[in-house]
Image 1 (cartoon, rainbow, N blue to C red):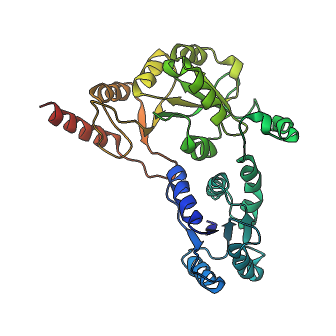
Image 2 (tube, rainbow, N blue to C red):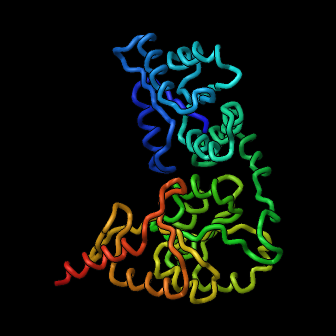
Image 3 (cartoon, rainbow, N blue to C red):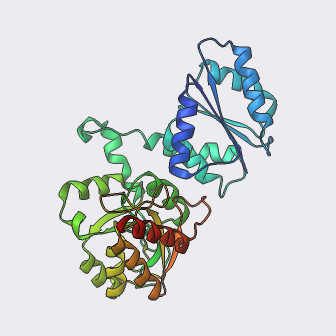
Length: 327
């Protein structure tokens, strides 16, 4: 796996590394190196060398630095000269760049290849609202990003690449980590509540990654689509449900899902929270029991790189906490 050094003035590198971990999960062979006000160039060089020494693969190293020509870049560039056949440097560090680098390591074995690949994502991550402030050439450019209708799936049917329960719906972990690993052409939020909320619908559509269409549909509409999806032949669909109850209703209605990824369920009054990201009411627990009886399997992970948690153990703990709370 290609190793990554994130280098910056001040604590930007530490912060963006933490942000990347929140979205894509903890990563091996990634180090942040910071230039602080009381440090000189030689101090920074030593920190860079110490970071590189921790890597299992020191032949393929990608450096993501904040500013072309700044001290972090200059010190990296001095080390780079002896390794330029394998190492690569990309300046202009931003979070989309880092996330894309993490995703690229899953399929690319060369720092040069990843460096070339992440440039477009880093540039596309810079956007502005209102859209009228965009340069004219930027407004005209996106036509090439349209998804290919024939991408995956059998003719006349959806290919359901992921179905996820997540109270946050379309957010960073979905738009980056899960989209990169499942390669959908459409992200579909299945929710009666969101379908009635024009603001939430608009925000979800704007959060879709480049080249992927985002839709919000009521549950009954998703059931109709699942039963007659010939207009979406070959499309790869990533479905998002806000609650397990919505997922159960869709599956009972005929949406052919055999597995649900369980990402997050927000805490609210009357719920118990057996782990950091999942909170349950009695209705939630009963709903998962009904889903299990239907043969649905559960994949409990925030991001693809996480290990899978045992859903039954989590439900047992939640039930015990609810029973104790209600005594």
